[in-house]
Image: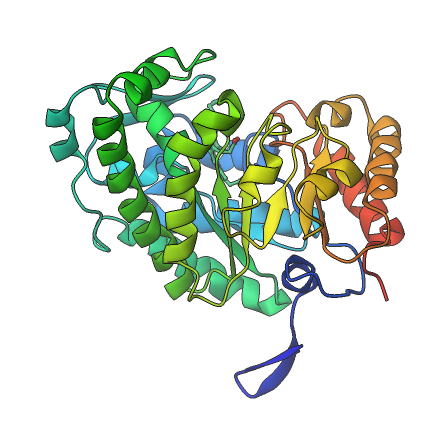
Length: 354
Ligand code: CP3
């Protein structure tokens, strides 16, 4: 497939074609959390302070978005942003504490808190769309697509309700089971914010979207169907008219992959707990993204290359594989290891290669 851009015929990037299940020249690869703390050039640029302040500076956020593309030659950039940006932008009182994660000054606990989640406007996220504008312009040179993203409503709600990262999800599970009406009102607000946030990124040139339902794996199948899937479906339906492929990802989702695959996404992200061939079977055979265990990149290039080859073997030759980690890059990862992973995927990946 070819697209007309400024009078030139530009080939559709392999990443986008693989997302649509088409055949490609080489298996595309990018890494969740590729923009961030594992890169010395990121740490040099970033300084101290909250990531939310760094994101308010479009020049800085654009540069961080581009750094991994330059260093690794990955097939896609992901916007340097965070899943809590929409809630922060409407003044919900979110901070991101280094080494810990999002912390909420006054967590969502009662109907009165709904007022604090007002409608998201384009003005609220001007810094994000300015970053997208700059990144898209810079990436045009190499025809590298930009992936926009958002947190899925359940995962964002887990932070807003719990007030801090949690292992048990006890407070949000208490809310969903004791006051489902209030829980669903919260989800309705988050659905609208998420659709606005994602549409704005595509309006400014993002060419694919990933929805992070990172903590969906904490739910039972029944809880997922009642309390997470409907909102995810609404978000995906709210962007379905945009001509961009979508990726839906969560961690520890082996038991719910078949359910997630009904949400209306093009590509299913598979975390590293499930072998890729088995994951693909569970999602019904459509395109998959994944799933190298990020921990296997911590012990030098040789061991990481072995692990990369294991994933490629499980992916097989069927079109529609986007190579990625099974979760984000760990901060202590040696960037040189990821450079070698990209090389091996490009040289040896077989899925859909003509
Ligand atoms: O993937 C990328 O490279 C793009 C940037 C990106 C960030 N956060 C930047 C970031 C993306 C896609 C995210 C998504 C995100 N944020 C998720 C979903 C992905 C996942 O990992 O499951 C979640 C759950 C969050 C919430 C969040 N923000 C956490 C758990 C943390 C880590 C806290 C820590 O310091 O350990 C953050 C902060 C954050 N977001 C950092 C980065 C680079 C690191 C902190 C910093 O540089 O200040």
